[in-house]
Length: 363
Image (cartoon, rainbow, N blue to C red; front, top):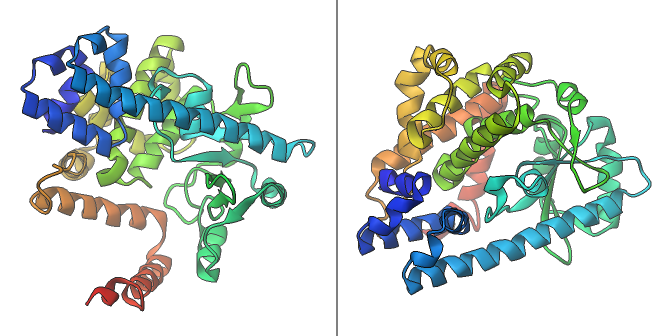
């Protein structure tokens, strides 16, 4: 059913020709993945939404209303962050969903973003945290070990949640953990930030870095089974958009990946984008991506299976999807931390889940 869902996404005109049962399943899967409003936007952009049956229009319209309200709230949160940083000289550098929305990228319309992600120089994090706490953002992880885990090993501070609006905020000082096997130099990212038109004081990564951050978020730190397909579609949309807008974008993207030591995850992404989304990757770029024989033989089959959207009515039947997702979950942790830190960390997490109120409380 992944083929049907991706076919409908890439070629919306095929959706109306599908059997009713298949349409209903695709809509349910799109809702689970947070893609229903985005699919409605694609139908509208191709003048196909008004031709759908009334029940489908109602389902999609409801999802789009929710997405529009969520985007309005996200833009308000950015405004509140600017207010918290006012007079401090701290930059507001947006990552991921918040950046897509304020840049008005085509794929942002209808896209659901769970939180706001910021990038700051590491030296500025204490000041930023004090300012945000003074304006109502509080820590969500009071446990001392969790605080130590984030502050000593990860690429971000523990998540913050606003005490009144319950919105979440992640403060990053890098795009990959400091203990990871790949550690791109954050100063290189900050050197290339660009202002957001129409939003004074707000910045984002340059186009190449926006896409590379999305790449590492999926292939080093992402949840393939829950949000992997949405993240892959983000990559497809980013590549298509910047390839149209930016001169020599593929060449600059590959050069930038080399400068940040991110060529390997980019090669993984290019193969998946071409296979599942039919992204128009240049032949020379795809040739370089396919030279990674180990990745093609081992990683690609796992990624393809893990990206299969779960059938809402068939829990537990897609064992191969769960197994692939588990393998990629283990891989992400192996890339994130060395074994001397990873094994004690996973052991502690297992004990926490198995303790009072955890996994063993159900028996």
